[in-house]
Image (cartoon, rainbow, N blue to C red; front, side):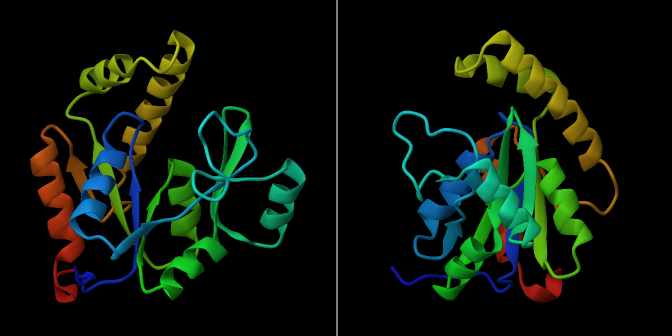
Length: 198
């Protein structure tokens, strides 16, 4: 299948609270357009979990290596969460662009703030919202992957993220994911709209 890149090839930055379906929407986009889009592999200081692969899931680095990359301005964004550092390196983005791919980033709120503050990063920002806070909580609990303390942390973080998303001008597109098919159609339409429609 011939790749069909969007008219606007800027970075696509997708954010939203855990449990809103960002990953599912991204996967649908990749499945529909193979060899067009690429997710970057983030750096982290946390230890690999069972089944995770170096350079595929994450680049697992030491805290000193991470700090060194920060001091060299090697990240477009980085954050500290759950006792570990996470960051998206400029090199991984450049490597994917060099292959002719359109880069998609899944980024936390702090990352959005950092990227927005940089005059050298040109991107389109999409925020995925749950239909309600209650729905988000139900989704997190139904996953069965986290204990109560972790769920409460994610919910507290989600409140801050949702409040930030309501700030005018932060995101170019806000998608409410109450129906996956409809949410994906909105995402696809936004990404593939003509440049003069921006």
